[in-house]
Length: 342
Image 1 (cartoon, helix red, strand yellow):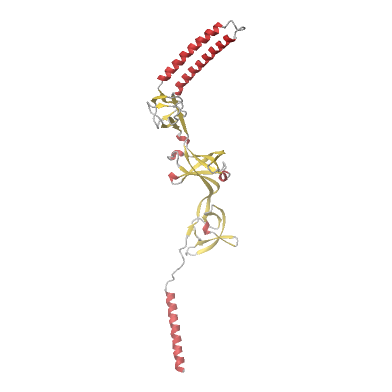
Image 2: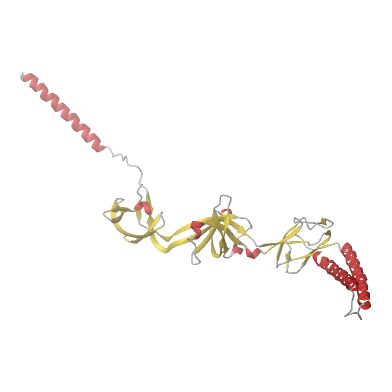
C-alpha cells in the first residue's frame, strides 16, 4: 500500500514538473499578435466642404451665316482658322446672273413707270369726273409700276444676300462650301460658322431638386474629364427660369458658368465634366478622418498614438463634417497620429 502511494506521489510530481516546464517555455517564446494591423491617420489642416455636382460640357459661342440667295460661289475670301472682324466679307456668289436680273427689273420698272405716267397724264384734268373705266386703268398701271419697283428692290437686295459677312469679331471655324459650288437657299449645310474663343463657358442642366439648392452667392467649381477632374474656379452667370422637358417628362434647368483664367489651359468646345456647387464650406481648419472619432456617453473621443507606440483615449470637440473628415475644434494638434476604427 505504501508502495502504491509512493508511486502516485512520483507520478503527480512528474506531471507538475512537466506543466511547469511547459509554462516556462511559453513564457520564454516571443508573443505572437493575432490582431490585424492597425490603421492610422494624421491630423491635418485643410478645407472641408459639402457640394453637389451636375454633369455638363464646355460650349463656345458660335454663329452661323448662310447665303440668303441661290447661285454659284465665285469667291471664298478666308479659310478656316482665320481671325475676322464684324462686317468683313467672307464669300461671294457669282454676280453675273444677279446683274442680269437687276437690269431686267430696272427695265421693267421704266416701262411700267412710263405707262403709268401716260395714263396719269391723260386723266389729270378729270379729277372730279374720272370714269370708272379711267380709274381702273390708272389704278392698274400704278399697281404695275409699284410692283416693278419692288422687283428692283428685291434684285438689289440679292446683291447684298450674295455676300456673307462676319456677324462678330472672332474666328472662322467652318466653311461648308467651296468656290464653283452651286448654292441653294434650301441647303442650310452651305454655311460659315464663326466662334468667339474668349466666350467659352460650361453648360449643364440641373434637375428640380438641385436647382433649389443653387444661389448666386455659392462658390462654384468646374472639373473636366480631359484634365483628370482638375478643379477650375468658376462663376455662375445664368440659371434659366424656363424648364426643359425630357422624354420621360422630367424638368431640368439650364445652367451657364464662366471659367476664370481659361487661357491657362486648352479648353475646347464639347469637353465633358461636372460643375460643383458648394452649399457649405469651412477653410483652414484642423481635421481628422471621421472613422477616427467615436462616441461614449455623449462625448467624442479619438485614440492618439503616444511616443511609446501605445494609444491614449483623448477627448475632442468636433464641428463641421463633409462625411469623410470632421473638423476638430479642440483636443488635437496637426501632425498627431490617430487610430482609424473599422
